Image 1 (cartoon, chains in turn brown, purple):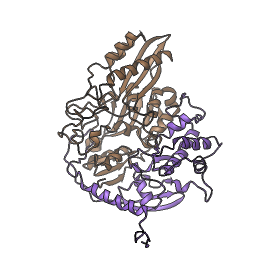
Image 2 (image 1 turned 30 degrees about the vertical axis):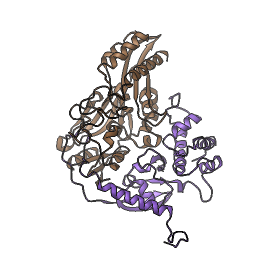
Image 3 (image 1 turned 90 degrees about the horizontal axis):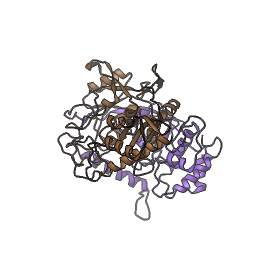
Image 4 (image 1 turned 180 degrees about the horizontal axis):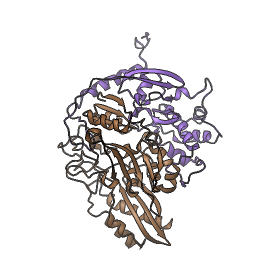
Length: 330
Length: 229
């Protein structure tokens, strides 16, 4: 690890201001991703602002019938919360399918959203990576790219976002609450999850719509839509592995007919993937093979493999079909 | 060092490992000075900020009931604080990246990977390591059960396995669900089937693959009412 200075922030506003003031500063919450990357010198912050003791570890009911999840709520506590288990099962399921018990006890809600890609070339500082060093090139394109993106990739970066939780947040239409540093106006703002994670384009090192120093205080969930909530993840091991593909689905079905459905996909792109056109096909539909194929084709429109990951396209379509059949039968 | 009849001086396995680790760390600091860059997600590419001088921090920890005050580089992980500063070498450094679980300890009663946490982040907190589980000469029920069921071969992962199992049993008693829990409805603690134990212990790797015996050891303790507190 490179040397860094360390401070413990007293308020969210002070944390934002401290990161804004120190060039090369970062927030540290659970640290499970940041310290991993610092040991490899993929991340080399010069200053760490510890945000663990800001009291942002509560889950509260909102006036509108939703939930407000503090940025520092640990993944294990969020998955085990009675309200989440009863009303946002897809979020519990997604969280429980990720990482290990030890990591979930440490990892936070905001940190999970901000975790970096697990692209091997991003981790390997002897290989070029535009995300690590803009302009260096991308070793994953034409390299070993079994885990990489089939949607939304660019000629600069084909990395995927590794989070399961973020896929559930996307299907639930979550919002990210932040505070800006005083030097940048000090305002609070709300970022819809759909606008939070960016596609790589020509700036793969810019992964979110957060501004420098902007600090996440909470993630809010609107009331859950009607229907059964499912999260299905396919990975190389039965436990403790990142998704090859995953499907989050909320399906309102009665008597074999789907009234409406929402779908979000993980492991396919630089952000959780959602396609309105695919969801529209679920309105008043039967789960026939023809419908399932049409929804799968619409969801994967524009997809193309990088070679080693071509299998992801038929795989996720099959996982989607199985998930919809399960939802209709539930 | 004492004289050793075999090689003339007393080199323990630990001194060799320490010397090797020091050489590795030194080599690690030499590389990649040029291509490492501070990169804030969401921030435009900026020239790398100069590396500051190492900062010494004072951290108070209560480890196995005993209060300690540490003066250490800010980079000191909780695992290195325990092993190198407090000489509590029961917690093991396996991968040092949160993948193997050999460093698992309990902080405020919850299991975490000590390698992926800075000691300074735990100022004022209580840590329990494998050295703190037994009550005097009386083994913790999990320690006794691992012995009874032969839940190890080389033993390197065992402290982490046992600390992880202690944390896991506490989580299950609180009714926390897992990936394989069929019904998410809040209520009674889930029954710890072998599938539940395996899923909940998946953050602890055993290179000798003693998994069947580890599961048997944990299963027996899980079935004891009020055990493994």
